[in-house]
Length: 218
Image (cartoon, rainbow, N blue to C red; front, side, top):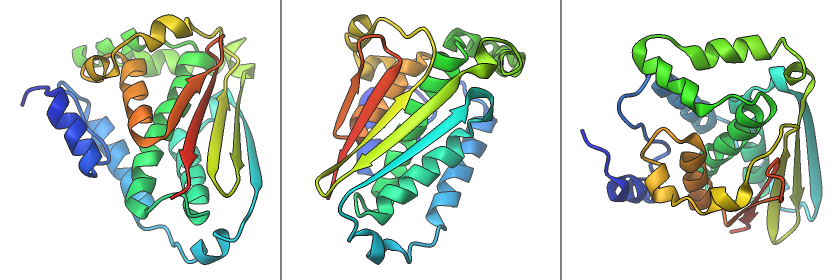
């Protein structure tokens, strides 16, 4: 019933695939359950073939209004799972980290939506989604592209996610304690904590519009 950082972190490390801070929107739970169920029931018969791939590159370019975060995250997670980068449980956790990274890049980067708008959900007015619906039809937001590149070799995979937004002050952001930020409304802080927990390295370019997630092979 109360936010506890230690319990939350321990639960995630022990295998929990998501968490919710109160007050929460039941739509968040529905989205999380859908993501988990979709990945759990994927067929994994192609795994044996994938482990023999020596080097590969995957590039995806999406117009900002057409980004389906859950679908993109599942696709890349499935791809890396096929290549032998993690177990099925780790795939779910990595998918959560990737979901946070893609969401931040497209919604806060390309669409320049402030996480402060989400406060309105607790008052019954979903201003965040209302503003999102407006911006996907307005310039310059509707013409921006989200670019994702996955580079894989026998040792590691690097996922590069680039938006066309204004970026942010990376140095100030990296000073934020993600353990403190994950329990409040700061989505960037929550995302950073999840990304650090389930990947081997997280870094940004100096402008703050490109994020690199590294995952080493098992």
